[in-house]
Length: 302
Image (cartoon, rainbow, N blue to C red; front, side, top):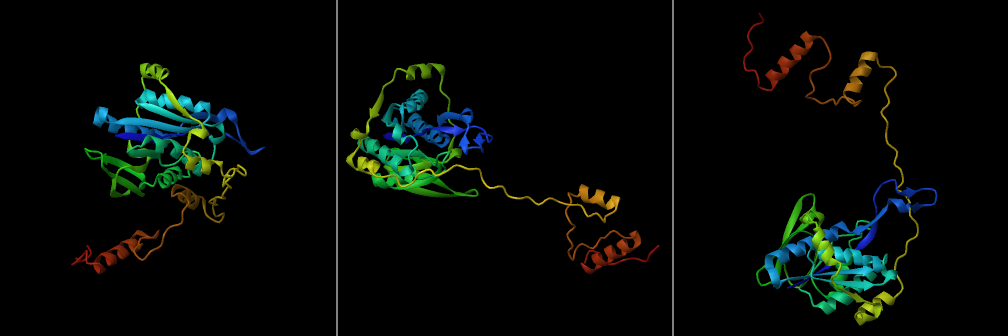
């Protein structure tokens, strides 16, 4: 069984204070290069299938981007991936989802894989489109946002649990090959050892230029991009209602309002106890208990 895992090695913001409002740019010192977290979960799921199936399973990692993406591929091989494929083109580093999916398609179609795993979405763009585009190009079924994956013994079909949000799930059965996009909560990614990191430095990475891709993929990539970045800005600030104390309240009432969180008391029909004399409050309490059947017989007052 061959499993292809699509990963993205990108630049991510590590702090909320990384935006510079003076020129609408991101401060370079607030950026870090790393593998997309959802893709790490996809790789971990592929490695767990490999652990169960042993030598019958091979895990391939595929990425698109400039030379710096090789660091991510070697990290994946240190975790246990068997082979790495790199579409080396700096112009595709920050391209739109359609172009990225076409480049991945140009490699995966040649690999003839039984299962393709992708992260649900990119942490920076949150588009969640690459897996769907890739399935369309490969003419394969696709299931998104999976939180559990089971493969049968002969690798002909898969049973997946798809997240519907708010804790709801649906169980689906799909023939293989297929494309699945993975949620974060599906597993906890492992960490490589120092020895495996050193061994990964000597492993070979298969590189693809744009000319080496499938003809259909090249045609899509060479077309004009459908979207472009216009500007970057912070979300608009929303005004918040501030509680203002009534100046006519006494000091005691102000203290009560502050202790109760400043909220107004809810008045309902069942709210029968008020701030009044104890005798009147007791009379209302007894009347309420009698009317609602809590007291069947009341003796004479003593």
